[in-house]
Image (cartoon, rainbow, N blue to C red):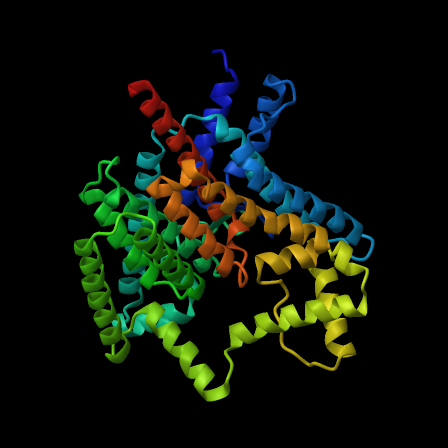
Length: 447
């Protein structure tokens, strides 16, 4: 069978779009990969071989070129950091991010005609399976719903957070689930929610009860995560989308009144859940956060994040050259610098050993150059989305709101670098660009 470049592109596309349903493998202790990551390097090499070593340049992919350049700077800084501490895990993660970004750039050649259908089917299966596992675990523990909800609030591995934190370990010959991805999966759920909201309100797309069902399931799943990042990107995206609709779109009093009624109903439900003795994971976490600030003027997770940012900046004062080069994606090297600053400036702060911010990740690991290039990912994408051709689409406008939401929330996380969101974000952006091009072509053909 003859395999050409388009076959390779289509296979890469399929591997990327099914990532929400994929779990990972631990090949050796601390070496954890998706199955896709074992196949994509060979497919990329095959693509380059068939295309004479070239990857087609596309202007609308500029955000990803900047992100790729930022990671290249961090790779160089990481290699330099090996003179202090040799630690390979960070470098392997960088190669993984680069692998996915190159894959997204390559699949820009795909047609994306059936993207929405595939995206929604995969999202539906992912959410439903996650909720089924959540319910199964509840009955398996024998706990009451109230107790189980309380347990799930503090044990992230119990939350329905998709499959990216589900690992089959070959050394242990068993499945394990680690915590820490609920913010990433939550941001993915917000993307799923927004895409289907667009389909419901779009006149050009045939919305169905299936789209409404996905919206409901996504909201249920979000309520079972303790991710404040997810809640913030959800609120920001919706607020901006409504603001744009009523300031730029055609104002209709009936729509406005309908939204006011919906907002009133949602607020009433939220206030009831807040005041009632009902255990819902997200509400529990919000209550804990507010009570912590009322009692001690701080909250542990938030305090340790502020501490790591403060110590990072202080470490640059202690070693000014590092602000240009960063510490590399080398945790031992980075943590030593933080500990040194903590002692030198007498702070005695409790801190986490990672930057806990997309922008501080770029600054800490790659210095000012990486920070500039990494920031351009957001800024250039926003610039692309406010272009007339993309902004005229409801999907383009709402996706712009989502990107701004991520821009804000990634100050306290780095979800746009996580494999799940990095890929699904890229594919959705490519679909919006290609869908608008098809719409313009159809309009031209019928004119």
